[in-house]
Length: 324
Image: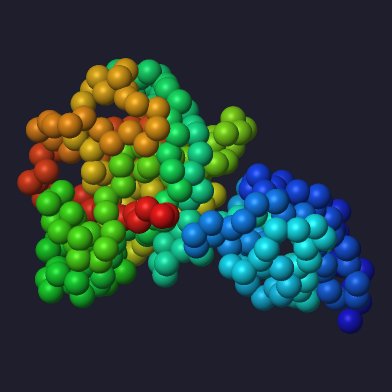
């Protein structure tokens, strides 16, 4: 096999996101890629050393699961740590970027959202102002909206108007219904801040060049089922393009309940760290837009509110779990 096509893999190395990782180098020996690094500080809790590869200039990274060496849970601090793996054809010639980082392996069906700070809100409407700095702790989030099949398996019924589509998001669920489901599976609804942070792409929102109007793109059609392309119905989850974190349908398909009470003035008084929303209210927050709505309402900053008892055929949810 000619290995020359793999050499471009080593020309660019990904940026290092974990503060404990430094001095990263890579070399190629035959078909084997060898990456060395230094590590300062012990891994905490369920943290792991992970290796990611990107073929789109660092916009998205996929975990390399077939690597050996100083990777995983039991890595100790030190210098000249080594990770190695055999190059596969699908990586060849893609000018890939690598990153070594501290992360947490997500539960099945979820993605790890590394905590960080971002600019929440927008100047588009009154209740999205002011734009303000928010810091959220790390958490796990469902890759997709909860489906009809998942809901029926746990709750024993399917309330959806568009029933008969197991992989479509469950809808016609109230805030209370979503909370009851969450309690049964050991998860919770996301806060409004967690939702927007994840929809924007997590830590990547620290870079102004990577910010998009919708969850993963400025082209709504590529990431969402909405009023112009839905055919007036929901669609199976994960058919459109995911955002930078691997989250699907954060824009469009169905609105998603958040845990917060709604307030149009809350942003002016919101705490910077892990805001939970007002202590009381009459309506709960929904985010993301739906198959009924159009471009402005599917933006990552757009805020909707509704009675927590209300059930609608364009309202569903996805869940999170704290990374403790």
